[in-house]
Length: 392
Ligand SMILES: *Cc1c(COP(=O)(O)O)cnc(C)c1O
Image (tube, rainbow, N blue to C red; front, side, top):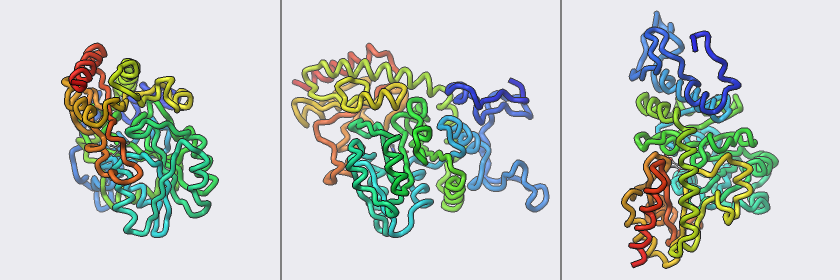
């Protein structure tokens, strides 16, 4: 590759993941673009910006390189990187809601997303309604033409791994005049492409699969429409919840291996889901790659594989569920997901504590596994020994 540049437009996913927005440094030839750890940029006379850079809240070359990469992976025209997934969501909501706006969300969205709208946005005059996104008639009934500003979809959902039909929901949302948003955190762009299915905005917690190494917190928005991009760009600059250069650089570094990581997450996930489904201590496995999952056929159509997130319900009840979550040795007990290392969590008291007592409450028999990319035999053995211990 010379600086006359290979055409990435028609390149495959992993080629884009490694090269989009990542030209070598022209002054030194460094293969990896440097981290521009600088808050401000010298001007050649007042207003004489080099490459358009002025002050790093408005733009920083490292953040730009991540944003260009994310847009290329999701098939968008623009991407915006933020300090966290929730900061990205908040910036999107600031861009499109006004007092009196209504928003319809899935009834099992990420707990923090629900809390953001329910506790931060409703005091500013926004109305939140939740709907069962796997039931298209229920969504049709929930969106009000001309009144619902946003239809918010998360698929696969967290932690019950429900699959909803992005293309059908985009049609329903658009017919009502709503902006259709898909939180693509669980699938990642490698498994699912919401913009191509008709969504207007893709949201990511890049903390999860995109960063992939549990070493950075971040979020992103990707859009196709230029007018919407302009509004979001203004809020990113004007409200300022931007990602820092080091975080942007770590995220770029993680993205380069997204395809190979998610292939392994998916094959490990399927092997674990099959083993858990056959285990007598487990009465239900929530994994879209299993034929027993109600969303399996849709997931097979809408995704290229099924990822590494699994939830299970323990037959012996909540005490056994807690013991299982506390008995694994390789799977570490921690919040978050999508990293190379396997994690286990008890949603009702961890990730989903904020939605206890609401209709988003997670059953107290459910344990969530983020299956990492370790050797599958070790993961299987760890889950087996933990289930044995949790039964006693
Ligand atoms: C983690 C997560 C978020 C929030 O992202 P943060 O980076 O923690 O702010 C949003 N949606 C989903 C599906 C998540 O898993």
